[in-house]
Amino acid sequence: MWVNSVNQTDLAGDDTAEHSALENKITIRLGTLATFLTGGTLLPGESTFVRFRVIVNAAMTPGTAIYNQASVSYSGANVTEPITELSDSDTNAPGNQPHVVFVNTTPPAIQLTHSATPALHNRPART
Image (cartoon, rainbow, N blue to C red; front, side, top):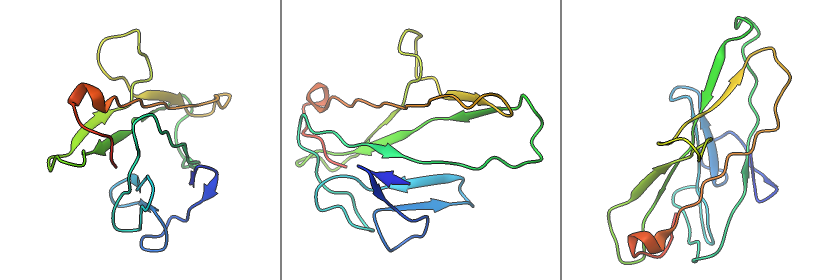
């Protein structure tokens, strides 16, 4: 995993990212002053870049679909309840679609983009 081109380990407690095989997810805490326990601050207009790689089980049947969808949780400086939003791989279709990759096909260039607009929620962005 990489956050803004900085390598992160899969282990919990040593940086701002971790992988949980049990939960089948990665958790990355973003923003200025983020730690292994809590996210930091992203100011309105700031952005961050996350990249990760996976290894697919060799026994998977060719053509099997793998669905990938990010969720982003954040809150504002004066708001205690977090807001959670999902990534959307097809902004032309209604709803939030996961990105779909098929096993044993040419690897696609995948870029998942999530754009949260805290102003719509009347709250400054914070992760």
